[in-house]
Amino acid sequence: MNTLNVTVAITGMNAQPDNPGPGLAVARCLRESKDFSGRIIGLGYDALDPGLYLHDICDASYLLPYPSAGDMAFLETLQSIHRKEKIDILIPCLDAELPGMVRLTPRLDELGIRYFLPTQEQLRLRNKDRLMELANIAGIQCPEIKAITHAAFFTHCEDEGWHYPLVVKGLFYGAKIVNSIDEAIHAFHSIASEWGFPVLVQKMVTGVEYNLMALGDGQGGMLGEVMIKKMAVTDKGKAWSGVSIFDESLYEASAALVKAVSWRGPLEVEVMRDQQGQYQLIEINPRFPAWVYLSAGLGRNLPLALLRLILDEPLGKFSPPDPGVMFIRYAHETIVPMREFEELVLSNR
Amino acid sequence: MSENSDTTAKYLHFPKPETLHRLAISENGFVFDPATGNHFTLNETGVCILRLFISGKTLQEIFSILQESYDVETQEMERDLLEFSSMINEFLGA
View 1: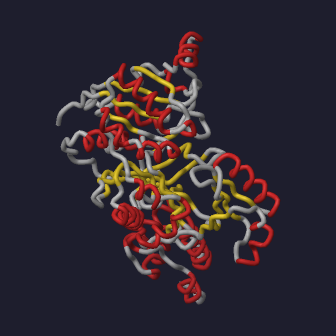
View 2: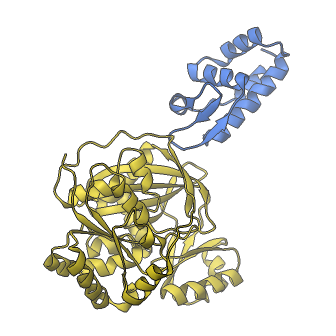
View 3: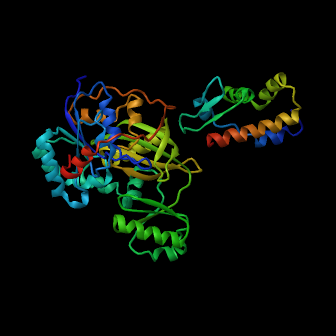
């Protein structure tokens, strides 16, 4: 197979230990592959995103305006970066930027930047408020979810069968487990102020969390799946350690989800295995997870496979599933001269 | 087997054969279930009993084999076996 010599721009270079973005792990998968000899452009939203300073992984780094600044602000910055770096491929790695990127695909086409993204409708179908609908299509169980716009719901929710503890979620991000009316109302206002309305309430499922990441080929096929059981999580519930597994029923449920929407691009399926051994769908993330480096460790380098899909290159064979391989995350410090920080703050690069 | 064996047989539930057959058991007694990611460790006796479960032997056969190998009262062995099977089921999420 050909070595890929392309310039790839990757977002999500934040790496806070309790909730790292996936961008750095995606970049690391490419950088460490013998089949990739191109350049990597790290894109972040904060001058303290550490991936922007890791020169052994990113050949160049830039700051983007936050998605809330609007599509045009993002496009103008991207055009400016593209003029300097000649980006061949863009891999967005954060949930909040996906809708804008999908809206901008005609402009990306004009710029000659390639991508492999879901459609607006596919994105809408995996929205948290439509998860039950999607789960139903795919034949997988899903805890009940309700969109609410008033905190008063929590004062009488038990009369309607919504018993505490409940999970209060933002439409795009954020989730808090609440055990009482007071906690619920506080979480409602906190999430609404950060992520807007509606706020979602999900019935709590207890059990063990399992995740699957894969690529959807856009024609109903699921490629290169990697499944894990989370072994340790951060305070925010993010995987700190995990072990690869292979479970036929999780594979089939996820393949059914991908097929149901002909998913195009990377995705992560989050499920909870309840006390009866049934999988309950919790979320679908439209991007690689932060633990994507495990895919490279298992011989199923999904970021590299994504590049091959984009470039219409043959994918080759993935290594067989290999249960029992662990990852353990760690945090370390990188040393940054103040002038580099200054340059990013002042000139976005 | 003792007079209580019927009770033992009633309460002793082996994990499903498909669950038992997929287990990876290391020589040090580390057991890993590749479908669930669950893991636990067993001592030498535990490994021996788990392998007997996996071999598909009946409860009667397992008793006979264990009695040949270990100097333990029958009732005590039945109690231990019940406790062991319950623990294995719990670990495997069966």
